[in-house]
Length: 145
Image (cartoon, rainbow, N blue to C red; front, side, top):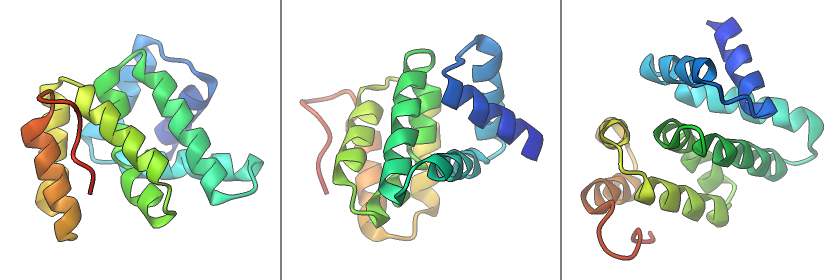
């Protein structure tokens, strides 16, 4: 398991978004290890960057690049950045994730968001997720919490 996480982190950081890399990322997400993958990505970024904020910003840029190859895969991984960005008061990252999720029309992402909302302990975050699930693709953009 650690081997495929390392391989996936390496592919994300190098911008290798071949079908086989996206398939690997999807397998990791399917088994519930998306948050661990994102944590590993941030940990690697911390090695070469001085602050947690810089590491999270770099991780987000890597996931934004992945979005070009697979929007739903990138968005599912971005959702693992929500709590980290929130803890660091990185509202620009939080808002960017909302926008990517808002514009991604994917049943797979909708199912992923429902799983997260179902287990979310924070009532405000759960309402935010439920709002995104119900309102994605309608109107002018996500409601800010």
